Image (tube, rainbow, N blue to C red; front, side, top):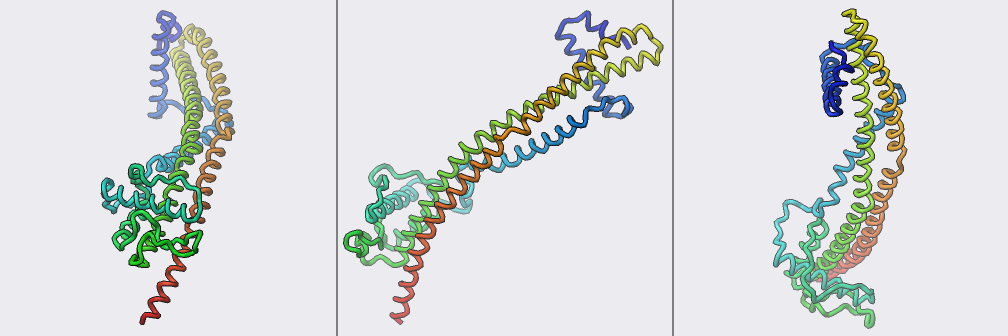
Length: 326
């Protein structure tokens, strides 16, 4: 085998790089096919190998959770696929009614809520909650509910039910109105949660992937440096077998240089891997994720609790009226 140092001295930097890559690939192939004794493969420090395992675990955890949480970037991740809604005229009309009911409820309960009632129809959001809201609102309208006023809400002045929906509206129609309004509110809260998850979790979580890639790159440098060293050692071994003493002596400096590069690359990789593993950003991102979920579920629970009490009273009243009419 010709001395690599003699060959590379006659080529430029690009040629030397190609020659090194060829040597590394040749060494890798020989190791893969079992043509190199285990003792001839340089063993890396135990600290380095343990850090490699931890970085691999971190990389897998980062990738797996990120792929799942990416669902928050798509509004309709919980939208029922079996629903065949027309998201144009029908959904716009129903959605506008829900918006009007929200404004009516806010007005009658003295709640200062900025809800447009005469603007363009609202966006037909594709979430499970909004789909439930539209489904219930459509039923309420068919049962005679007003498209602008919320029935059954007590006036803050008289304490009597609002007459905006008309006396002929069915009790089920009123219940569907309130159900639709509650689901719409929860749907809007879910959209707020999604925005918080995207900004507080997904953005920094994905950005942290770049730090993991730095560790991966540092490890690749170690791998290439190790292959380069072992390829030189194999060349020296072959030269010794062929009793080419002069070539062996000329290769010694290349082996020493390769050893120094491997030590340097290993130390750098250890430093980079430790820095990535100790970075608090992933934990901070998880905290933001759970905070967004907690705030959503707490607010949704309040909406549902209010709706549950209202509908429970309506159910009791309807049952009482039904029994007394028999």
